[in-house]
Amino acid sequence: MTVERISRTRVRFQRVLRITLAWAIMACLAAVFEHATLLSNGVHSQLADHIGERLPASLLAGLLGGGLYIFVLRDRWRKLPYFQAAGIMAVLLLAVVVLLFALLPAPGLAHLTPGGRLLSFQFAGTYLYWLLLMAGTMLMVRLNDQYGNGGISYLTGFYHKPRPEMRIFMFLDMRSSTAIAERLGHTRYFELLNELYADITDPILYSRGEIYQYVGDEISVSWSLRKGAGRQRCIRCFLDIRSKLEQRAAHYEARYGLAPVFKAGFHYGPVTTGEVGLAKKERIYSGDVVNTAAHIQSQCNAHGVDNLISQDLIDVLHLPESYTLREIGSTVLKGRRQEIRLWTLVRVKG
Image 1 (cartoon, rainbow, N blue to C red):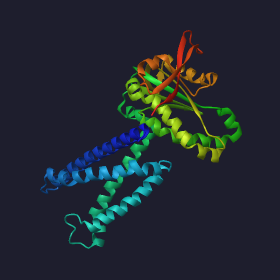
Image 2 (image 1 turned 90 degrees about the vertical axis):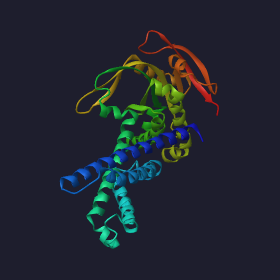
Image 3 (image 1 turned 180 degrees about the vertical axis):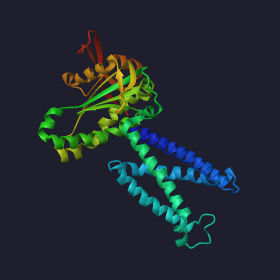
Image 4 (image 1 turned 90 degrees about the horizontal axis):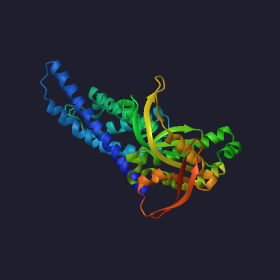
């Protein structure tokens, strides 16, 4: 199993566990609500009984249903509009709930015929509960895909006040993009970019990277120093993107008449991170490291390589011996007075 597949499986399994935990919490909250409702209407109720009924089902459904969605259905449905995907899920969920009520009658419904069970308020309530839970889960997964691994910070307000950080940046740019755009035309070029962004999203997410910006055919990705340097995730991300595009080269050749290649520039350093705007809140990074990473990437063509890494980042990555580097030398980048030493990753063994 490749490093990419191991990382992908690990991240997906973590997502399934988070879904299971969220569903378990919702089950406990539903049990509390049900218990309070019965007590307010003068009906004897034990909270432990309600939790005992709901919690095991939610844990099992989270592992099985969440696992099915994350490992199988998400990749198939991610290009569909949310409401279309949610509609398909509603139909599949209806079939499951109908089957369960027909074969395993809930307490208090055993005396009814299968048709009678399906017309009961308990059936409607059960179906609506799981439908809302599944629709909410799908929405949160899509929002996580939309904003990347840093999306939770938008909800918690972690960057409401500017924070100093050490971050790694990778600037990706498609080689010969201007000539490609002129040859394909605006519409076909947009379709190409859309496919490319879809293909490279998972390697970024599985490396725990955060997509900072899309600017035309350029993508900037950021990691906290700990996440990006750990297991050389920032470098692995680029290698996984390159591998993914090589595997898909035949598809791109057949559809667009070309095999897209990306070049990347890496750098790290101190930045100030914060959120700006009210109507369209956005996180920004202020610091010389951002521009430096972009300028490093712009040097790839001049040196005939598809990646350039600053000496500063090399010093903190502690690359294993399986990584073969070639020194490019020191150069002066646009906007900088001091020279910066650059390296390129030639190959990785294994």
